[in-house]
Amino acid sequence: MKGLQRISGLSCGLIGVTDLERSMHFYCEGLGFRDAGTRVVDPELGVRRCRLESEGRFLVLETVPETNHSAWVGDDLQLGMRHIGMKVHDVELWAERARAAGARFTVEPKDAFGGVRIAFFQDPDGSLLEFVQGNVQYNKVCSEELVAREASLSVPVRPRVDHVAVSVGSLEASLRFYEGHLGFRVIGQLVRGDDPRGFVITYCQAGQCVLEMFSFSVPMRPNSWQPDLVAPGLLRLCLSASNIKEAERELVAAGAVRHRVPYGAGYAPVYSDPDGTPVELVEVGL
Image 1: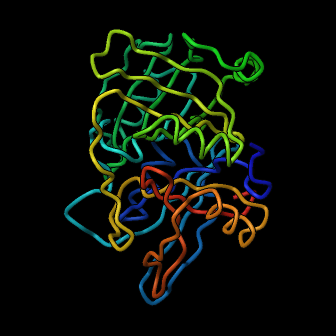
Image 2 (image 1 turned 120 degrees about the vertical axis):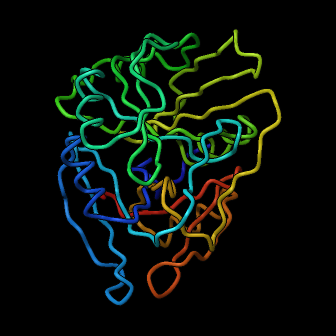
Image 3 (image 1 turned 90 degrees about the horizontal axis):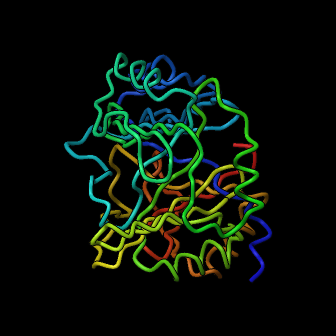
């Protein structure tokens, strides 16, 4: 099926933070991002959204109320957002910079399946982030063209947003939505034959960035996201759209569910994919 004409790919991941100044210091001083502009969403409530840039790609931070919990749960078998990954030229070097800025590491730098070197850590509000050094060596290649495109990218000087990972319940249903309707293209897969959970990672090119889909052969736990629950952590996927209104109609036609979520003093439309993972439409160029 032809991809949606108004959606050009995965723009970035949206991260909820409780203290914008603290998070700005973490991402800029520790991870090498630059402030690309902050805007006030609601002056009365003090809601702000900050756009961060590194190597031409972006993350967006949004202030949320202080709570006792994070939107992220450390369980790959729970449907929803897992982490945001960044390519680096030297995992150890950037891990030490992140650690000096206060990062708590959940996985220390190590060689990983797929021929890459990785490290996982959390930002001040518990969002899980990953450093990746090298290109994935897929054990099932689906597009030689996209593998070559990935290999042709320059080695980043600063961390470059590479992917957002999500856990999915039905790989077939997720591919029908993201590949069939949105036009994302499958690059390849890592099939973990030694994992009793039947773990497979499917990599989809989604504009500049990659959407990593974790799928398993064992039962999955429900997505914890709720439209009226605003919490710090990984909030939602941001999809670039050339025309928001038309893209909204096309997204619903593809099977996404429309929700009204608290946003400043009012509400904003957010959509959920087949697994209940929240998706926001943003203008191209965000």
